[in-house]
Image 1 (spheres, rainbow, N blue to C red):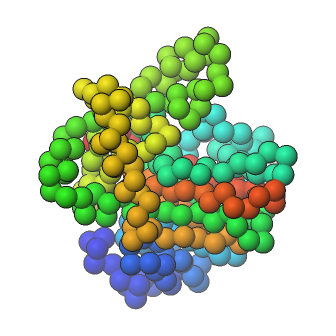
Image 2 (cartoon, rainbow, N blue to C red; image 1 turned 90 degrees about the horizontal axis):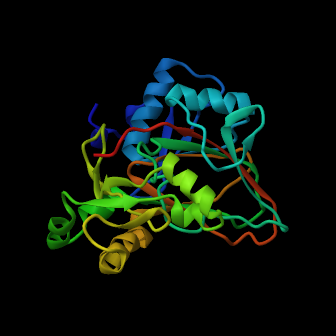
Length: 281
């Protein structure tokens, strides 16, 4: 089935309700505790078509959360994020009054790795009554709508991605050297090709992109800022308001996301499983 030909009424097992004309759809009439091959196939089609899927009232245990992730692909263990003791695949993203946390920068996850994640399934365990939404951006649309001269400037070029900006600042020199050996800088295309759909998307982000290959950081900064800012255009976005037991599932190869830091000291706990991806091309 061609991804761009999929319509909401093309599905037998799920009901698909798009959030915006650019990205995202809420999936109704499904219980992710009851999986079979037909259901997974329809969810995969909807995922490719809308890039981010949202589910409400999914009463998954951590074991069932892992099982759903594994139905979509092989799961990774994050090198830095805290995880659930009995389930290292489940990372914990938690914010409290004593320790506020929000991933408040547009990014794709862990692009400093040779093979960044395919995607993630994030579940809201403890959700504040308001605030703490997550925004998502369609980076294929961001690439498609670039001026032709800018596309010509970036096509075929690669950017250098590193763990340093996001995770290296508080490390000792020794720890930084050890980490650099484990996770050396990676060169990924500025315009990445999706391995399933063949579409190109912008694949640079502030937390992990250091510079453009062949340019020193100061020289590449104006171009990088121009590309980073594309994710912040509202016409490429959707915004998801969390409720307890809600799920967001995104394709990390063609989207970016931003956790809105407006929940103050209210408790927010999210749990995530992440799918192993392949090397960008």
